[in-house]
Structure formats: C-alpha cells, structure tokens
Length: 168
Length: 84
Image (cartoon, rainbow over all chains, first blue to last red; front, side):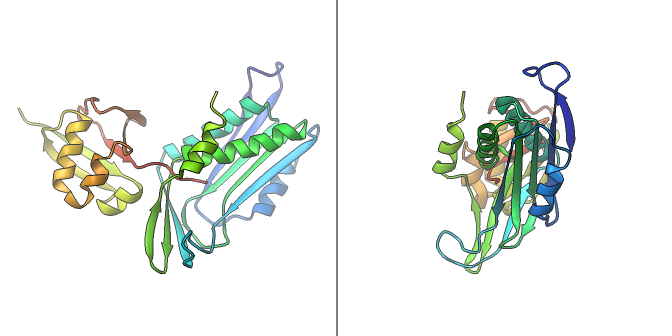
C-alpha cells in the first residue's frame, strides 16, 4: 500500500511517501531499491537493508524452509503503522517496507526496508528503527523447518532490547 | 440460559497445534480467562501455551485483557510476534 501523508511535523504541503507491502511471493531487493529511488530529487541519503533467510539454524542444522504465518488484516496494518512511525520520528521524505509471508527458502529475502532523507543520519537510523520494530511488533509468527524438525521462533531478549532502545 | 457460539482463531505455534479456527457452540465462557480455561481442558497438548500470559487475546482487532467479556465476538489468540 502506498500512502501520501501530510505530516503534522512538516511544513504545510510537504508530503512523505510511505510504501509498505506484504509479499506472498519471492521479491528482488535490487528491483525494490531501484523502484524506491525513482523520482527522488532533494534527498541526500538513501539507506536500505535486506534481511535474508539463513541457511543454518542457531544449532548448525541445515534449514529447509522458513515459514512466516500472518494475520489477514493486522499484519499489513502493523507494517503501515511501523512505516508511519518511522516517517514521523525521522522526518523522512520517503520510505519502503516489503515483508514476505508464507514459505521462504534459504537465501531468499525476508524483508526489505529503505529510507530516504535530506541527510544520511536520519536515513540510517530510520532503517535501523524499522528493522528493530519489525522484529518485535510486526504481526508475524516465524517457524524454522530444518532436517531435525520444526521450531517456532520467539523474539529473543536481544530483539526486545534492540526494540527498547527506541522507546520514548 | 444458553451460551453463545464463539469462533476462536489461532496463529503461529497454536495454529499448528490446535488448528486455525475452532467454533465453540453454546459456550459458558464469559471472559477471555474463562475461554482459556475451556480451551486448555479441550486441548491438553496445548494447555501450557493456552494458559501462558504471553499468549495475547485479540477481539475486534484489538488486544484485550483477561476480564474482557466475549459476548459472541470472534476471539483470536496471538503468540509472541516474530517478524523481520
């Protein structure tokens, strides 16, 4: 979903483009970045991050597949909410979030985030912020299917600590 | 007095253990806490997860507390989220 929002913290008439998407199929992060960069004019900093499905579990077993369960309404809503919060917090000109659901093979992209801003710092921080929030606040449930069996993955203490860094 | 019919949806680990949706007919469960107890009795293999307070209940797309009255609404149970 693409939203053009007026932000209350901006000058009247200045808009931010928030593009969030739940992808049921494989996506190409390079194409996503190219699409994201189209039409930008005044921005001095573009930052993107791609999260990729790992080939090994934390115990070293081969991962056959990752499965991301999702909610029919609240998953997309959570992506939009995280995008809007990032746009507000870092006064971005444009941002994108693409997040996979369903079965994901090792090496495939799980998530793509991008942020464009007048200056680099805000773009870096926004990408970091979006990823920390996606780990703990996006409405997904992740299962790792490996040779030795399947395991549902809870957010770790480290994930929660990373998220807590951004608490106001 | 007859109880209401309630649809209960499960996600993540519980979606696998119990099923995506169960429809409970004529339930006496008034609150979320009552419903948890009923479900834990019905699905003993998943009782530990069902009674764990990290499993949050959601009614009308909003997270609710244990004393929330169901009143025939659909109830969804969310294990801890793990995206990214």
